[in-house]
Image (cartoon, rainbow, N blue to C red; front, top):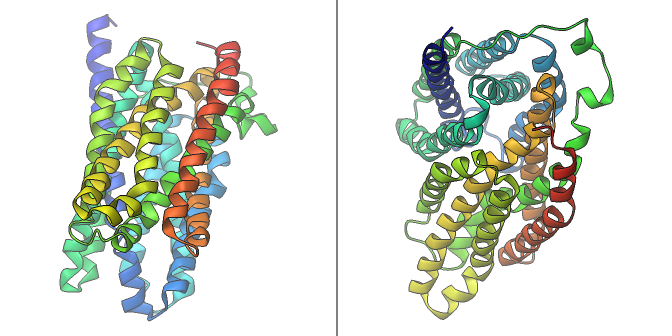
Length: 403
């Protein structure tokens, strides 16, 4: 096969896997702001119980991550991806019929969480399989944009669809977009992977978690905590600070920052500036976190200044994290042999998921004394992560990197 044919094949497969990822994320994000409403209207439960029900999804995702990495490394990646995608789409059918039993709904959410955890782990690894190594950072950057676009538009569409109170339309849209994504996923042509002498099926602790990536995982975990606090509580904090008009634009502007940063950061990664790109992203995110911590103070002095701080902070926070995401993903991949790419991705995603969940829990606790203290604490965590990355993660990566 000549080089031009190979280029066309990987380009087509890359486009297909990006479309499939967008459709998967879109079908997920249109449910994020609407399921609490659905649970309250259908099962007539309080907000505390709504939180418990929704958290089952996150717990399921966390539980399946390590096993997902092992399975995606041990078996043909595309088959694992398609099976997980099919299970993810089938779960949407359950939302149409489970309207009387809360226990059954919880079981459905757990199943959906398992399929999502498997799907995202296999999908993140599959996209690496189809991208030439020389353009991996750039490819991961654009791939990440699909999730950011879904995050920007999915919740908005979901809330629009439920204005009529007809949740069947909402679930039908999720199912339809999931089916479209499954169609494009099936069209991806992935490299054939064989299990050599049964080695890929051998069980050991490091088959479920990348030992070489523990330090990077700790640093990434510290970064995820303030991110989780921001996505969960920034709107409430803004309202308390006097930002009552168009506060929802924070997430749109944050998504714009995420998308803008990825157009350049991936190219820097491909030039070899992996740790440098991560440090830059951390520094920008740190400035954004400082802006969050100062929001109530600035708003107290001048409300217009508060609005400016609020929206500039949103862009900086998004731009910083968007800069470091593809670089961090590449760092984990470069610490693992090709046969353990999925394990590396599972470790990367586990650090992020645990950090997000911790941020939600800590934010709720710290907010008892004031939301601004959540973001002061988040600022300290980003600074600690940066110092730990420079002093420990970077030397370790340079010593143990495989490519």
